[in-house]
Length: 205
Image 1 (spheres, one colour):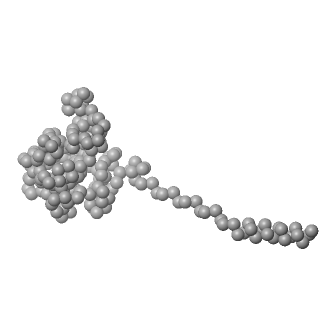
Image 2 (cartoon, helix red, strand yellow):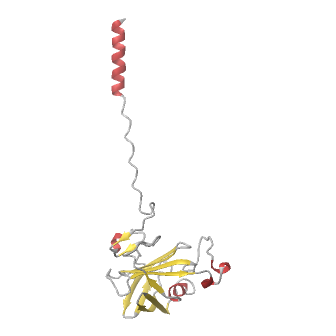
Image 3 (cartoon, one colour):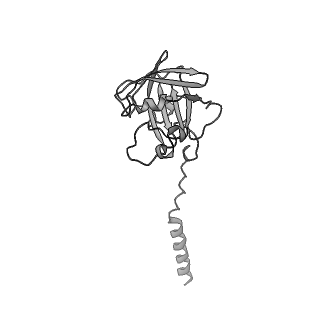
């Protein structure tokens, strides 16, 4: 009886040692900057995600060098500016009109041959390439009008950027020209003070 008890205890201990150890707890993935509400920062275009950088649809991308127009600009429109709430409030849609003007904050970023447009109220985004030749600005490779090239004159008075459309039929009846050239834009010092919800992020600092 004693020998049988000892043998049974040995079998129990051996079985316990052979049981696989529980798997280690999986490491929690590091939260992305977007999940934490942080703004992406990029010193060069290559630092931006490929899904954000403009694509050379019909024209080669320009050399990623700084130009005189480079900077981050902001425009804030009110309901009254756009004809009141009945005309200006954005509404859910599956195929919204590109460059439709919305109340609230809009940003326009020129950065080393790439431009970025953001309407915060409607979450409309646009990208493309640009070239500067004196006071002439050319916009191209916009996914909303990938075969069209828009031309503007531009003028920077202190912190105010003024665009004037010369020839731009992008987005149906030229909505891009209306969106970009109707009011002046104010240059904002993103390298000195972080701007909330800035898309695609703080560039060039």
